[in-house]
Amino acid sequence: MDASNEHALNDELLQDIQRLSFEYFLNEANPANGLVADRNTPTSPASIAAVGLALSSYPVGVERGFMTRAAAIERTLATLRFFWNAPHGPEPDATGYKGFYYHFLDMQTGRRVWKCELSTVDTALLLAGVLSAGAYFDQDDGSELEIRQLADALYRRADWRWAQNGGPTVTHGWRPEKGFLRYRWEGFDEALILYVLGLGSPTHPLPPESYAAWLSSYKWKTIYGRELVYAGPLFIHQFSHIWIDFRGIRDAFMRDHDSDYFQNSRQATYMQRDYAIRNPKGLSGYGENCWGVTASDGPGPTKREMTIDGRRFFGYLARGAPFGPDDGTLSPWAAITSLPFAPEIVLPALRHFHEMDLHVGNPYGFVASFNPTIAAADGRACGWVSPDHVGINQGPIALMIENYRSDFLWQLMRGVPAIATGLHRAGFSGGWL
Image 1 (cartoon, rainbow, N blue to C red):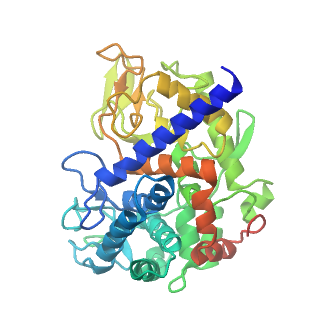
Image 2: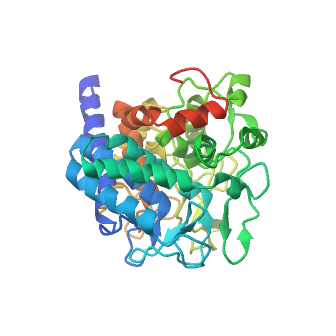
């Protein structure tokens, strides 16, 4: 295939996958309150992280012609009004408390379900979407003015210092029945966006010491000759990058290691491919164009495991490479979301997934995850496939494809005071800052 034809195929595939991924937020939502289903199943509750990704995706949808500006305004206003007016307090059936929100909410009432936790990181993902909506809808129209006012009010309400529960780092969350969760955001993880937003708050900011405490828990590793801050699941290297352009900006830790978080994610992306090529466990399908180990559904029963021919297979699990756990389950969305970091290896993987027919019969693009180590009943090379699509998988695809194509969301978020302030307070300098 010559270069021009290959470029045309890449662009056509990217447009198609971006549009299909975006449509999740149009179809799997309650237009009355803006809540977005965690999964495309009839009984699924809403995920507040999926709502944040939806709020960030609507501007992309407008720019790409997937929805009108009027429709995006209507959906965004419904969402922000709901979160501002929903029951907010210590009651066990509220929607949120102290400016944070429960991980999962009833799609109709918006109340807490499953006795889930008030989630600090999922609230951070929600607020990132809230702030992106406030930045995009900048016209003098009354509706767009209300969006900006509500976005600012929602961000100001979050009490980040309360979420520390007296410690240096931020807790994972809180339950009205038992209080704060014992786990904290320590060690390199998806909480980079959480700390930036917490530090940037004009009302209840995290102290700079909290970020220093988080950095002190990092682990710098050399794996396959690549040096990086390590985290096994690929999504950890991606989520914060949806909103923040880390190219060329460095905090104290990255200055000490002559790197930045963008380069770190590039190394992590290559490390995943290195692992698939080496394939130390002899799992089926793995190779230079077939990789993507992350948190995902798997062929095992939910929260349990099953054994086939001596191999263990798990249900939903935070899978990681190269140190595991890994049962042969791969997630196309995880590979695609690394597109801005390493397009030269992601685009061939995208074409490979396309050639495997992983999109056949799926309304929102590729299957969420598949496991070729388990022979499929119908003989398909992909083996087991996940029956569900998940909101927090779909959003990163649409948004990171856009960042690769145009830098759109990165450019938008550069102008958000909370982001710039948070980065400065965290000690970032250089580049666009």
